Picture (cartoon, rainbow, N blue to C red):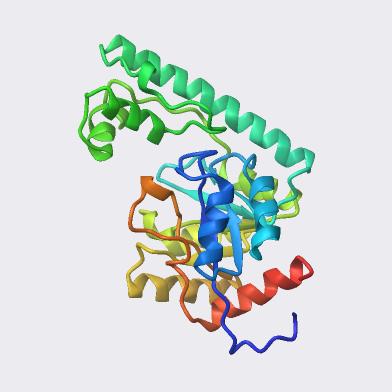
Length: 282
């Protein structure tokens, strides 16, 4: 595999979400979509949980899709900042404990949000979906809609979940430095997710994260403009980072964004594919 010419392109998607967090499809269904879309390499990267990965990996063996374990960490930062952990060791004690801490934090945060909504007369508990490993604010937003307090997700966040609204609350999360250390200690690859969502000096941020051990940047993403993609590829070259691509697939919670849609024919992505396949010994 390591000797495959780089002119042969291979479709992959390293950023997807299942019903274990805020997606709408099971891990097995996601792998099925990938197989039908001729995706050769896939990572399931649910928010702060890896509980769906074994099912995805088993389905991958059956359907001919190489599935690598992944996770998406939300970081303690003054703006939105997410970091993917790719090809992490699911059994590593550091990863297991970090998932426990993240779940405890989310559970505590969610209960305070729901209590604040109760106090404001916005009763949504009966409408909150249960069963997923990681309950996110998106789940609460959908409960707000189901209860009739908002018509769409954007309105639910704007009226009840943003700073200054009745249900706003946040818990202190892992810092980027801690997240990158967790991923490294779990034998994974830390990758900056969807840099197009970052509202600050990206050059300085990437330089800082590289200092902590960042190894990749999600240079290809559905919401990117061509100019943004060029910038992210340039940053990857400057800092010798892997360029990855990810759809950020959420199923029905993000319609019109199919698995594999971020992939492009690109020498950078060919190199990443080769690097990952060599790493996992395929």
